[in-house]
Image 1: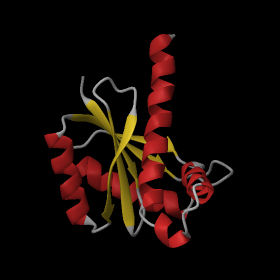
Image 2: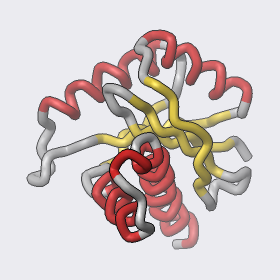
Image 3: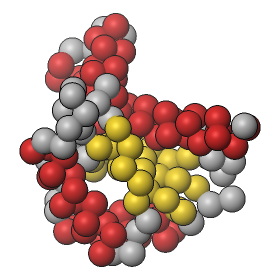
Length: 140
């Protein structure tokens, strides 16, 4: 079965998670610096190399569920991914970074130690929530 990729977009860094081959479990893959077009090319290569069927991109809606400035920035990124031939699914990520930050603080990591790890953790959380939702649909 083709795998899925989870992407937590940030203007500085991008967290990347990948599903296992059964599309049941998300694992952290990498945190990359966001280098614009070079990052899109790198993601396209990863999609090809890993036989990725779908890229799930965290979509940062406001707390009211509305599209704000950050979501519009992610929309531009998604447009670039689609132009590179990737299949994209937007996934609500309103709570993933906060949840990842809380977990890191609970683990005793300083803010400096958290940099980069939060992006990766958020990517894992958003992809896992997507996989769990899909599993619920498959099991119904």
